[in-house]
Amino acid sequence: MIRKTRLFTPGPTPLLPAAQFAMAAADIHHRTAEFRALYSRVLVQLKEFVGTTAGDIVILSSSGTGAMEAAMSNLTSPGDRVLVLTAGKFGERWSGLAKAFGCPVDVVSAPYGETFSIDEVKAALKPETRCVFMQATETSTGVRHCVPAVAQLLKEQKSEALLVVDAITGLGTTHIDMDAWGVDVLIGGSQKAVMIPPGLAYLAVGPKAWDRMEATYNPRYYFDLRKERKNAKNGESAYTPAVALIAALGAALDWIAAQASTAENPAGSIVEGRKKLVENAETISAMTRSAVLALGLKLFAPDAPGTAATAVLAPEGVDSGIFVKELKSRFAAIITNGQGEMKGQIFRIAHLGFFDYMDTIALIGALEQVVVKSLPQLGAKFGDGLIAAQKVYAERSATAAADRKCLCGREDGHCSLVSSAAK
Ligand SMILES: *Cc1c(COP(=O)(O)O)cnc(C)c1O
Image 1 (cartoon, protein in one colour):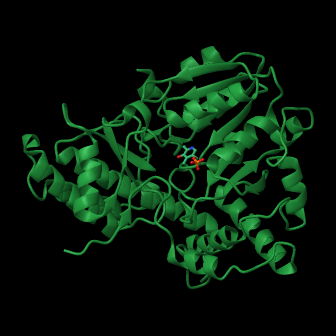
Image 2 (cartoon, rainbow, N blue to C red; image 1 turned 120 degrees about the vertical axis):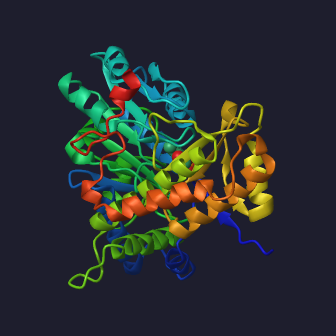
Image 3 (cartoon, rainbow, N blue to C red; image 1 turned 90 degrees about the vertical axis):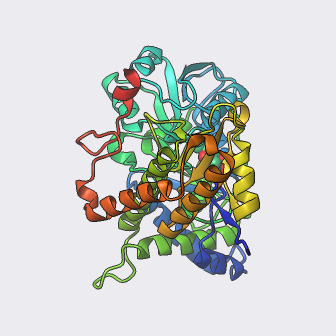
């Protein structure tokens, strides 16, 4: 049979065709009125997508880690004590950055596949903590952390610490309310839910974080956020930006808005479109989780599953690479192995961005082929995974989004995985 290559990876993710066309047509010089109009428009759109009115958006030509580094270097001075909340490879990146910039680090860590408890965070927070760094979703383990609970804790403790959230796979997959929760910096990346190639990172920076930068003095040059903000006010970036990617981002945000198009407002709305994107990831991830369980496999993060990616545990004595290899060789479906020491133990399927019902059903069908043929010890038969996924889809389609409970079951719509993690 012929095979179409399809990415099911948590970044880069499948590209949106409209964004690819925009990219190919972006033969624009960056010091022109044409570019200034594009850049100003994209900055406004991105602000809506992130969902902040208080914060300012900065776009950087780098991968997501560049924005993480910018947050660290711009918000700290050498010797500033910081708190890192980590439960995976991306959380560990925060600790590495803090050390690189001379900041003593307190760490609250949870085992891979779990999230930390808020009591541990409370115990580790010191009066002199200057910043708290965390992920919204830890892509290496498929876990979702509870950002509002941490934000709430900082408020209750009257902490002066800034809350910096790597939402690189959280944005567009998870409900996040930066201003209402009190997140000071929220970070995103282009190769994730916004469906364009790698190469752009962006930050939403709130007023407290801008104030902090007046006094901090860790070294920064290319990633100087205040310089970028100043230039952005005039519709430009400080240095040559990734023009084609910015054009792609504009097209992708138009597309996201159009997902919520109505007769009165055909262009739709980014805020409503983003909600659809989040609901989409919620549905697809729920279909995937239930299919995986029906096939006799186990979830790596059963208590705090995120919607950006699902991490699946390989059965005892089986290398998870077999799933990666067979899905690729037989069906040209690209999934990811575990990172670091999780390699060989788990495999990960992404749900962020341009994935729909058809992609999901196809991947589950292919996964069934692998399980039935190569892992007969699981006792799964054709249809087990698909039936489970079909049921989840039918149930979710029959329930209005507003009536659906948050994954964690908390009534106020905020996710709080804390109680389950604290047990
Ligand atoms: C992808 C990702 C990043 C950024 O990685 P880059 O390779 O630098 O783009 C950071 N944090 C999380 C949670 C991610 O998923």
